Length: 124
Image (cartoon, rainbow, N blue to C red):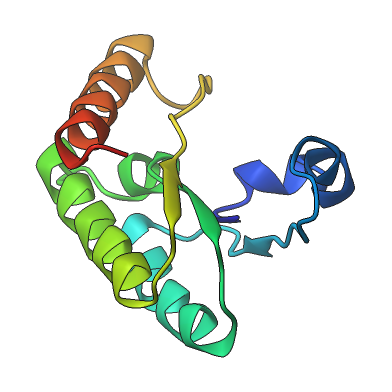
């Protein structure tokens, strides 16, 4: 699981209960934007062989930049997905953006709608 600080609340041992015969690892980069995460992801993919990857990002992009667009977020996500595919990751999951009082609900809905479409088009 790769992400900003949001997924750190998830406990790997709890996820391991649902994913039998697997080791669940978290790589958390607090404050990371999708740009940073796409950079940080690369060396971890080459260090270990992952069957599945969960990517969570997006909130910090819109908190730290007034010029960030959903299309730019999707470009960075596509880079991360491509890196996973090059590393033979079998299952790629993109986490939706959760509600936070720091972002308006309408924006979160727009982001999640775009993420769903992105995933549907990529067939993940």
